[in-house]
Amino acid sequence: MFRDTRTYPLSAPRVVRFDPDQTLLLGPVDESQVVVSVEQAKAFLPVRVNTYDNQIAKLIDAVTRQVESYVRRDVILKNVQSFWFRTPQIAILPRGPHSEIIKVESINADGDITELAEGVDYRVEGYTFKQLVSINGERSLSVQFRSGYDADKIPLEIPQAILQELSLQFKNRQDPDTPAMTSVGSLSLEARHLLSSLIRRSY
Image (cartoon, rainbow, N blue to C red; front, side, top):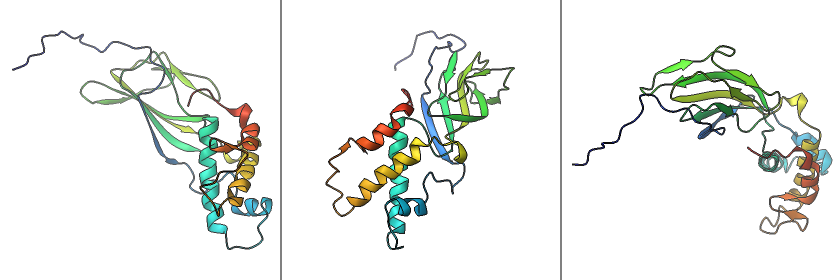
């Protein structure tokens, strides 16, 4: 019978690991939030009948996700939870922009959870993209936060890029296997140009 004869420290060593081990999307803060409405999209295309409303709504959702992936930040405001299996010295929150840190919890080896207090157990650095420093926690760390833009703070380049990409995809809707000639990867060159200044290195 195998026996593990190795010795382990009584407490887990603190690691300098900035990025979380796991991140979960808990859902949008407001189910009704959209960057571009169906009415705005129809005016841009232009489409004057209601026949394609459902298809346009689905395209808006899909293109918004493409834009989020390309700029490596959330556009629609979301509730997010990240985990670090070993509490780091500095915990850099993923995604972003970060509007609010909702809850920070420390989890010990027995699975007991303790909520940490800002200013006492940790400090927050950063304005648009945040990180936690001087964390006084045990084995593991959990952080719940909000990521994305309030509706009135979305950069103008984002809805313009969504409309531009939506126009190309709507025109090519009869042949979805044939991409637009101006497309590179998942977005058109025009949309990529509009979004170039917003790309975040990490996500």
